[in-house]
Structures are given as structure tokens and as C-alpha cells.
Image 1 (spheres, rainbow, N blue to C red):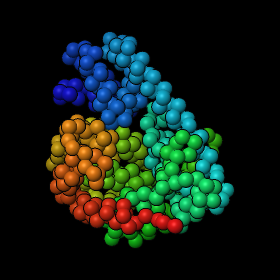
Image 2: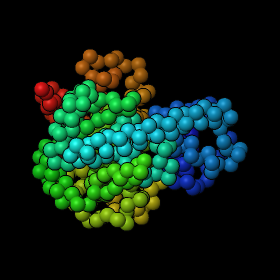
Image 3: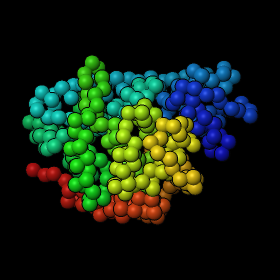
Length: 366
């Protein structure tokens, strides 16, 4: 995709995300242009968000009917999936709490609630974390109910429940640096009485405090950036959350959290990307980033890697490794190590150590 068409992609993304703005075109888009935009929207799992821009575009700016119909079918699928997910969230939350388990909804449908059109945000699975030692209680509950699950690397487990993929996470945050574990536990205790509630299918579902939601979402973006990459959907998540809660957070405290966890330099990159490409107003940021912050390399990397690096066209003809899930994995991991180590050194350096431990030695077993 050329730079001009890429700019149009971001215009459409911003219009759909914020529900305002005008599309600036020097000439009408061709069928091939729209097919390319749809392809990249799919790679970054933002089909629903860009679809929401169509209601604001002029009639002569809309995609051809055939492409629009194909897009509408995809959005209908997204809506149906989200309805199923919400039903499962409400059911599981009720089951857990009735059995003395205190779940907290992570990312996904939790952050979708901050969107202008929540049901148009694509959500792959349901992520639960838990208060105190309730991860173990939830694991025992699954065994008791004979729900087959798999302990996975990354200190988690997963399973399918009513055709929806579920993940339980022992760790609330995706930090790799083991030396900040005590600090993160301290944060969880400090913010324990500031949990937020959202309404899903008439049930009050627990979320983390706003500051911790931001930390959780942003470090999740960082973790995947360090590995194989991450798509623009997660950046939209961060932007929406900042915009909705900026007046309700302790901004000095959030700055200190980012600094103490060692990711502040990377957060500056993230904030500039959110402003320049996702359309987040600078007034919604908790603090300013340095004027000389350069994200040219980062936006290109995000653009090509897409959603978790699965559709990175730069590696589509590469050989598949027996040890890794993606082609040219060793090369890609090394390249990202060199890119991110200067901005989040402790997280980047800890990656191979924690990944190996969690995959081979850190799994629960019976």
C-alpha cells in the first residue's frame, strides 16, 4: 500500500473511532484501493471501526456496493460474536462469584465498553484475572466441573466454553521483568478498593481501577511489540480508554507507575502514536511526551506486523521453524529486541528468560 492510501486508511480509522471528521481525497478510490484497505483493516482487526466511518462519508466516497455488502456481512459476524461473548461473560462471572471466586475482566469486552460502538470492536477471547489466590480456586473449579483446559506458557490456562475461547491469567499484568513483582502486588493492594464495574447483560462485571486498566492494556501492547508485533486495534483500545477516563485518573501517580516499572520511555512513543495516527486529543494524555520523540520506525513496524504478526507480508515466503509458531521467528525476535531494548530495556532483556521458563517450567501440573 502506498503512503497516500495508507493516509486514507488512518483517516477512515479516526473517523470511525471518534465519529467525526471528513475524508480528504484527491481522487476517488478504486475497487482495488478499497480491497487493499479492507485487507489491512482485517490484518489489524479494525474492520468494524472503519465500517463505522461509512455513515459519515459522502455518498461518492463510499466503497462499491459489492465491497460494502461484504464488509457489512463481516460486521454482522462481529456483532453476533460479541453478543455470544457477553452472554458467556455474564454466565461465567455469576458462576465464579457464586463459588467464592473473584474474577476481574481483562481487556477485550471490558475496554470495548469505552467505545462509541462497543459491538463493532473485535474481541478474540475472554480474559480473566483474579484477586489474591483465586486463580488456583478457578483452576480447581474447572476440574470439579470437568471442563477440559490446558495450562499454557505465560502463567495462564485456556479452554473453550460454549464455543468461546477463554483464558485465565495468573498474572494481572504482562510484565516480564521479575524484579517488579513486589511493586505490582503493592499496586494491586493499593487500588483494591477502586475496582470499576461495567454492565454486561444486566450483570455488574468487575474491572481494574482506571490507572491499572491503562497499565494492563499498554504493557500488553509492549509485550507483543517486543515479540511479533501487534495491530492497531489495541492502540485504539488505549486511545479510547485514555479519552474516557483522563479526567478521572491520578496523572502524577500514573506517570510514577510507568517510571517505576521501567516503561516510561516506551510510553512516550505510544502516546505520540496515539495522537498522530489514532487521533487521541493531546488533552486526553496524562502528561506530555518529549518534543523530539520519533515514532517513524515504530509506526512502520506496527503497520506491517499487524495483529500479533500473523499476517506480516514481509515474512510470508519464509520457512516455518519447528520451535516457533511463526516463520523466521528467531530473526523477527532479534530485530525487535534491538528496536525496543533502548526504550524498555528490562522488559526486552527479560523476554527470552521468562518465555523459556513459563513455557517449559512455569506451567501448573497435577
